[in-house]
Image 1 (cartoon, rainbow, N blue to C red):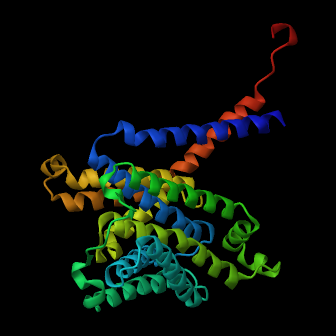
Image 2 (cartoon, rainbow, N blue to C red):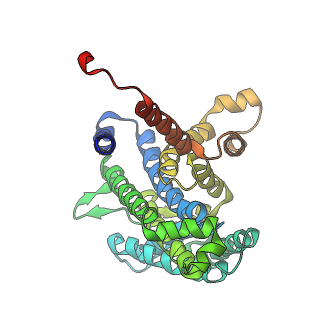
Image 3 (cartoon, helix red, strand yellow):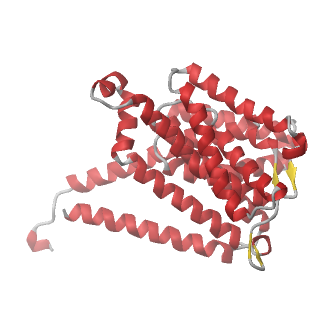
Length: 343
C-alpha cells in the first residue's frame, strides 16, 4: 500500500511540475517562431494522440483521421467567413461535423479488415479533399479559404498576445489527453483491446464489434475537429494542404515513434517532431551537406525515423520509458531492507 501511495505522489508531482513548466514557457521564451511551432506541435499532438485510439487501441488502420481535422478547420472557417458566425460557435460546429463524418466513414469501414480498411479510409479522405476543391466559391478551392477571422473575446485579440493561443491550445491538449486516458482505461477501452487482440473470443463473450469500433471512430474525431477549428483561426486560413501526404506522414510518425497504444507517447513526440521537422525544412546547411533540396530532407528524415523505430524499438519512445520505469521499480522491490540497527 505504501508503494502505491508513493507512485501516486510521484505521478501527481510530475503533473504539477509539468503544469508549472508549461505556464512559465511563454514568460521565458521570447522567440516568436518557437512559440508558433509549439502551438502547432500541440495541435498536431491532439490529432496524433486521438489517431492512436483507433490505430493503436482499436487496431483499425484508419487513414481518414486527418480528414476529421480538416473538416473541423473548414467548417469553422466557412461559418465565420461566409455566414459571419462567431468562431466560438464555429469551433464546436467543426467538432460536430468531424463526428458526423467519422460515423459515415466507420459504417463501411467496420465491415472490412486489414489493408481494405486503410484503402477505404484513405479514399474517403481524398473524397473530402476533392469535394472541397470542387467548390471554390465556398471553400476557396486550391487557394484555400482566406480571411478567416482571428479569435477574440470582446476587444482582446488572441494574435496580439503571445500567451493566449499557447494557453488555449495547451488547455485543449490537456483536456484531450485526460479524456483519452480515462477512455482507454475504462471498460470501453478494455473492450477495444480485447477486440484488437482476441477478436473471435471477445465477440463470443458478447462484446459488440461493430458498435465498439463505430464509437472508437466517433470519439477519436471530436478533439481533432476542435483542434482543426482552432488551427484555422490561429493561421487565419484553411488550406487543402491539411489533407496532404506530408502532414499525414508526419502525424503517423508521431504515433509510431511515440508509441502505439500509449497516448502519452504521441503527445510528447508530436511537439518535438513538429519543431524538428520544421527546423530541417528551413535549415540550409543540410541541403548544402547532402546536396539535395530542403523539402525532401524532412521526408527522408521522417521515413528513416519510422523504419528505425519499427526495427529496433517497436513500442516507441513511451514504451522505452515504461520499460525503464518497470526495471527501476523491480530493482527497488528486490533490494534488501536495511537492518533495524542500521536505521
